Image 1 (tube, rainbow, N blue to C red):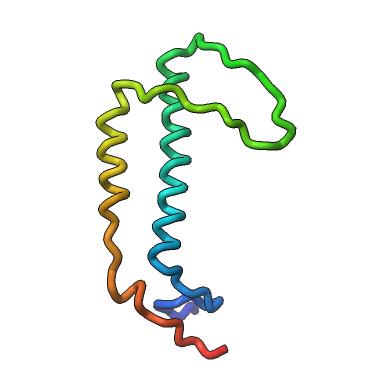
Image 2: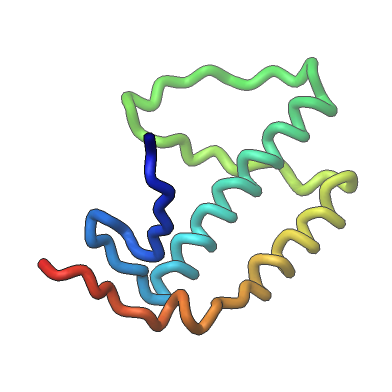
Amino acid sequence: MFAKSNYTLSSKNISVPPRHIYREKLALKAIQFMRWLKFRVHFHENPLSKTERREFYGLKSDTKPPDTPESLKDFEREFWNMIKNVKFRRDAVGRKNSIPT
């Protein structure tokens, strides 16, 4: 009924991004995640803390997350070590897309 396929490259001819672009995006997403996590932990540990409701008219808030709680410091240190030590496979980054255009 269905033939088993093994695709090593994108069928839409999307190339693998360069390492520096991948690292940039990874760092930005890691910063967003840590910011979100700090807010979540803060409001979980302080359920009665009330935040001021303001209108931002569709723009992102510039509110800074509270200081890192003690319960999160070890996790944050290990998380940034993991992000810093990302290794790339030589064959995945160096290969060129061979699909004819």
